[in-house]
Amino acid sequence: MVVFLLFLIFISCRKEDKFDTSPDTRLSFSTDTVLFDTVFSTVGSSSRVFMIYNPSKERISISSIRLARGESSPFRINVDGISATEINDLEIAAKDSAFVFVKVTIDPNEANNPLIQQDSIVFTTNGNIQDVKLVAWGQDAHFYRNGIIGSDYVFTADKPHVIYGFLAVDSLFTLTIEAGSKLHFHSGSFLLVYTAATLKVNGTKENPVIFQGDRLEPYYQDIAGQWGRIWLYAGSIDNEINYAIIRNGEVGIHADTTGNSPNPTLRISNSIIYNMSQTGILGQGTHIEAVNCVVGNCGNRSVALTLGGKYDFRHCSIGNFWNKSFRRGSALELNNYYFDVDNNVQLRPLEMAYFGNCVIYGEKNEEITIDQHSSGGVLNYRFDHCLLKTELNISDQEKFPGSLKNETPWFRDPMLGQFQPDSTLSALINKGNLSVHQGSFIDLSTDIEGNSRISDEAPDIGAYEFQLPEERKR
Image (cartoon, rainbow, N blue to C red):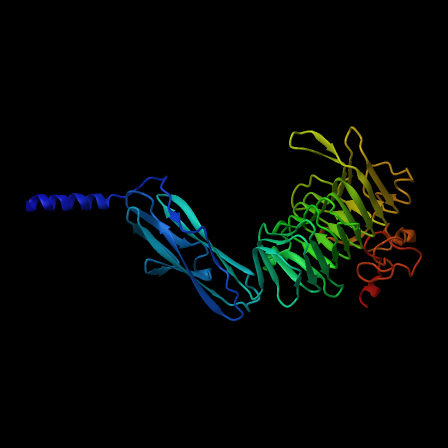
């Protein structure tokens, strides 16, 4: 009898020692992301815990559990009492689990720290690699994670505003952003303004409002596509942006179908949009007025006014000298149709696309695309005293009054998005028309930098008035 009992104990031990070695075996976790949403104003630390589960009917051995950033990580892990940046050969019994404790230490006053600290715990089991992401707020800032603003709200310039995921302004409410505010967006994150909601950006020449990614290291200063877009959703109303800098995202401003308001969907002035991986301004069947704006160097189109609508651009510099990949689109695109879900053509009238005293330029031979459907439809446009890079015939003075074609603007540094005329030879100088100033929603007697347009022979084309080198230093 004793021998029999010993035999049973031996067999059970042998079963327990059997490991699941299948490469298809995958761990389960209580979460895929560990978020530390504590905002520190001084050096501090915080801890979280999650579970690893072995779903197998046999014991498993996790050959490696490690922090992807290793010793440079602000995070530390403890797995079943073992603290290290890497732990090897952790065994978990069949249908059992293990605790993982994660700690992060943050110095929010370290200026070189990312606004959002990230790492991941990488698990290797039978050659199968999985991870759990670690995210912590890295500086003293206002953080918004997949939030909806359900009242009138104001962003002040006291601390940076960091969007992780999305931030939406709910219907009937207004988000006002004060001068000097800085908005930082995590990868893929975006600002959404719902139907009947409103965005007001109140920057100044001295203190513009800045929209950019959340990576502050020098390497990321000119990397496009770091965040999503400012999306003025279909039916948003009375949006106004003055003195903003919008950079390094996918789409600068996406303005959708016109809402229930007598005013344009968007009025934007004295603003710079550049280095977007797709498009600077994307209008879709909407109404936009833009003055004293610079939109340039985007991965596809700088300005795309599609699906019809109504548009009015005055003293704008629209350029595209994108050099980071092949660019399919032109600096400017106009369009009056789309294909529905059944692949049927739907015409949308482009009532008017007016450009007064604007420069539209780039390194391609053709920087203006007029995409009118072959069956016709309404597509009205007018280039009034503009400088154009185009192969279009501009002899029609109803559509191209006073406009110039393919003359050299002599920009200061177009590759860097600096579209100021930088030579007395520039074709922009004194080639504008004062009558364009009439009907603008702001005074156009000064340019985006505050220089007078009415102190010499005629206004210059574009957002900038030419300044002699000695005048720039004043």
